[in-house]
Image 1: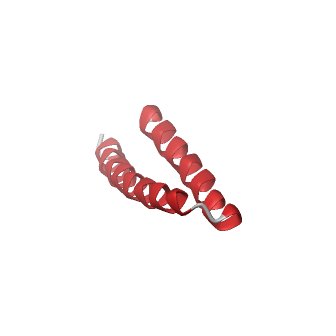
Image 2 (image 1 turned 90 degrees about the vertical axis):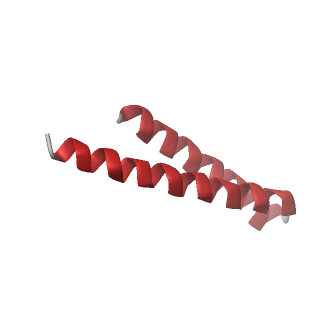
Image 3 (image 1 turned 60 degrees about the vertical axis):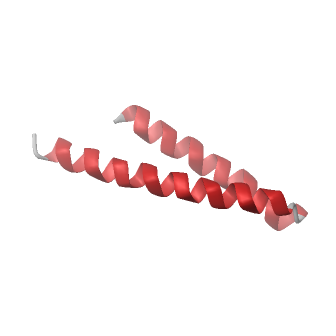
Length: 58
C-alpha cells in the first residue's frame, strides 16, 4: 500500500510540473504529458480503491 501511495504522489508531482509548464510557458508538449499523467493517476487511484477495500475487509 505504501508503494502505491508513493507512485500516486510521484505521478501527481509529474502532473503539477507539466501543467505548470503548459500554463506558464505555453509548452504544448507539456499538455500532452500532463494529460498522459492524468490517465496514469486515474489508474493508480482505482488500484488504491481496490486495495483499500480489501484491507478494510480484513
